[in-house]
Length: 189
Image 1: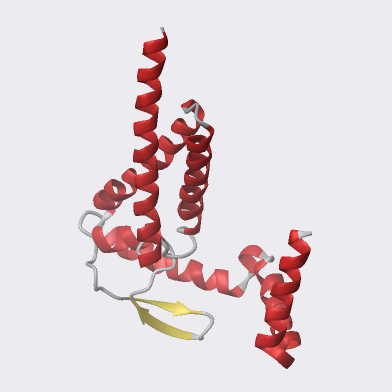
Image 2: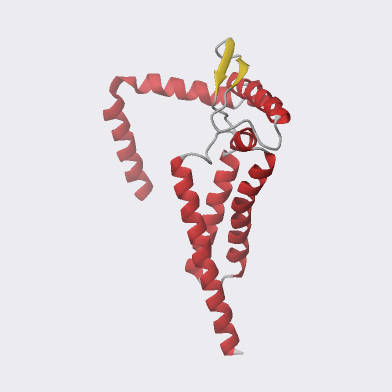
C-alpha cells in the first residue's frame, strides 16, 4: 500500500510539474534508454571512447607526474563532429592519472579501496545487527562510487567527497565497535 501511495504522489508531482510535456519527456527518456541499451554502438558511448583514448595518450606522455590540474586536451568529438578542447574527463580513474600521474592516482584510490574492503570484512565479523547493516550500506555505497567512477568523474565532485568522508567515518565507527566486541568476547572467556 505504501508503494502505491508513493507512486501516486510521484505521478501527480510529475503531472503538475510537467503538465503537457509528459509525453515529450517520456519520448526523450525512452529514446535515451533504447540508445544506451545498444552498448558500444551507442553514439554517446563511442564519444566517450574517443575521449578516453585521447586521455590515455596524454597519460602515456606524462605517466609519473601527470599533466597538471588545469591542463586541457583535445579529441575528435563524434557528437559535435568537431575537435573539442576540454579539461573534463568522463572517467574518474583516467582523470586522476591524467592530472596527477599514475603513482599518486594509485595511492589516492588505494585508501578508498582499502576502506571498501575493510567495510566488507567488518560486515562479515561484526555481531551487532545495527553495525552489520551500517557496514552493508557502506559497502554498497563504496561499490556504487567505484563503479560509477568508471563512466563519470564522481570522485572529485563535492557531494561524492562528502559521501566518502561519511563512509570513512562509518568504517572507523564500526572498527571501534569491533574492538569492543573483541574485548567483550575476551571477558566471557
